[in-house]
Image (tube, rainbow, N blue to C red):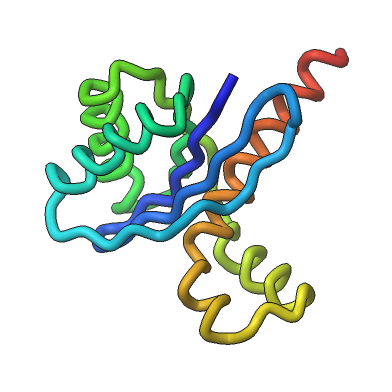
Length: 135
């Protein structure tokens, strides 16, 4: 089963892909957008191209949480694919540290930061599924 991980922001989103068989997530890209409709259309095309069967959307606390839930509902409507919410607390900080440790250059790190965060969100979900299956 092919999965899409999303780190949602008000101007840009980070994307990662993975699948249940390999149990691995990988960063895909960062997309900047001006309207929710624009990003929903782009994600609809991506879901078809990548043959995504489930979407994992990172959710934070506070004000942004409700906006993310609303976005997730619209995305589910648009794509007709289940959207699973996964805690994204500290993923950006962790992604930054891992990228530094991997000697990824500053510009590349900054450009792909949200995709790395999406990758961590998706990998956490894949690890959870794997652990659930083994218990």
